[in-house]
Length: 263
Ligand code: IPD
Ligand code: CA
Ligand code: CA
Ligand code: CA
Image (cartoon, rainbow, N blue to C red; front, side, top):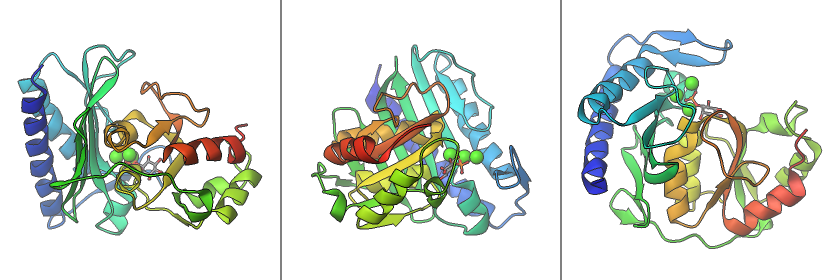
């Protein structure tokens, strides 16, 4: 497999898709809802996914593609090359803020993340990594992360998880929010993974993410020494929705041990 060539190809598709998304703001965007009234999707989410899938299936017919909007393949194993694509991660931000959303792409071989990309479209910030070759923010090599104690950590968490919910005991999470230096919530899992990878946040966690939300970011995070796992501390299966945490290594262990009690 020529990963260098696939890397170049993926980068140019992502840049072109980003351009199309920026141009879409000059058109009428139609907003629909999916599973609930706050679960938004637009014609642009769908068109961008189709743009990727048309190109990838034509140029790499033996690869499989898993995309959020369902135009790709349904998979029940990670055999071979699988592209995990979120055409717009942070659709609510795309619709309401016209910023703070990203294209997220991870390319895996037999379940191992080989290439990872997060493109913050409106800032034109590109986070990318090749397995074993380090991670980059635009052309700048990202340094390996050093550990941070909880008292100095900035943690990405959606406030909803610190209220009573059916996934996790909320009292230890309230304690986490009180004990860390601060919390942030950007509304795009991909951007939050990019921020942990580039040292702008120290951890990010969510109770329910899909493979396309995290596949690209996990490759980037791993290249700078961040640890990604489920809330049980296990590797993600990438075959369905799972709990998720990415953090500097000591911090991940501390949070899982002291602040997560799954129901
Ligand atoms: C969502 C965003 C959000 C996260 C949700 C995701 P989408 O992705 O990443 O931050 O909290 O769980 O579904 O639907 O905007 O691609
Ligand atoms: Ca969505
Ligand atoms: Ca997403
Ligand atoms: Ca999406």
